Amino acid sequence: MGSVVGGHVLTWSFDSKRILYSILAPPNIFAQEVDSAQPPERLTNSTNSETAVDWSLDGKYVLFAANSNELSSKTRFDLWVLPMTGDRKPFPFLETPFRERRGQFSPDGKWVAYESDESGHDEVYVESFPSRRAKWQVSSKGGGYVRWRRDRKELFYIASDRKLMSVAVHTRREALSSERRVPYFP
Image (cartoon, rainbow, N blue to C red):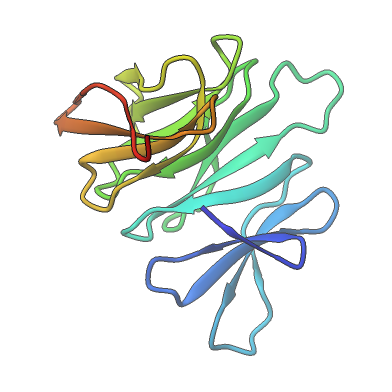
């Protein structure tokens, strides 16, 4: 998740050598070397409004939220992936009529946790990455602002009653199971 500085959301690489941010109109994603006087590198060139939300631990992928600026669009906020190697062509991870946002890669890069309003209100979900073969709803009765614990054994999110919730998570290959949700600070 990024930091907000001067109205811009900044997303740091895990080695802290680069930052991502969005500028221009519509906002697209740029990368800047922290210890360099070189100009920023433009990573996306789209008519969508885009904001980087996470950078995978291995540095191979950037997860970003894209909001279509086309009046005829059938989607709202979607989650896209930008490969940082190869042709660097962005591809949709979640492109639906619902609002998907605030995603985060799991520390091993095999899952993406995010919030979506597909149920009628914001809930937390986890999907396998990059295949999207498996999906689980983690929260119940509302949730958002999801974050992984560094060892990927626990998810934290804010419930609709504003409590910080903790969910133990067990992952095996393309399977995920979770235990009972408990308030972290009762």
